[in-house]
Image 1: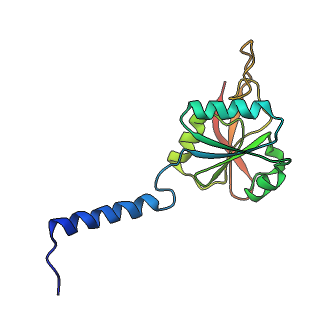
Image 2: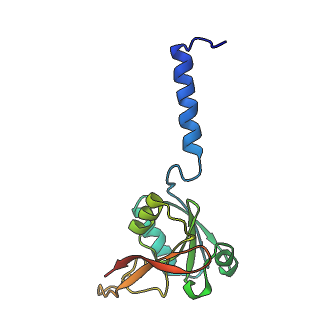
Image 3: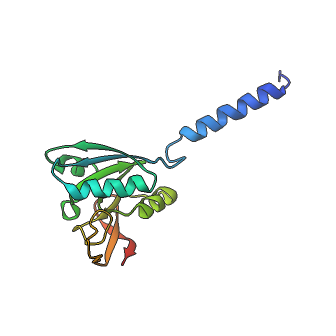
Length: 154
């Protein structure tokens, strides 16, 4: 026997459905960023400032070495940089621009995350007083360690 659906019961069921959808993996992009860096890295702090200015909430964790974080997150040693961050189920390695992170979280590709290897001048956190910039690429880290170009800068 079906019970009549009152307006209150209808609204309550809709609220529950919305709450379940919001909690589903990948349902919405988080702005909470867990950053792992060594204690002496100044450019990492500058990158965190860039991310915070773009609206991300960064929590910094200092470690003597980042090798274990990178390996558990699927970052090949060839892409290793001075800091590693985690957001929305993805890893970020190096000086990845905030706009690339927003795009990653919006598109949600099948990948481990993004990397900007080699700390290029002019990338977020690697700005110079004279404004010198090097062209660089943000790489999409594919499952299994391969890469493809995600964005080009400069």
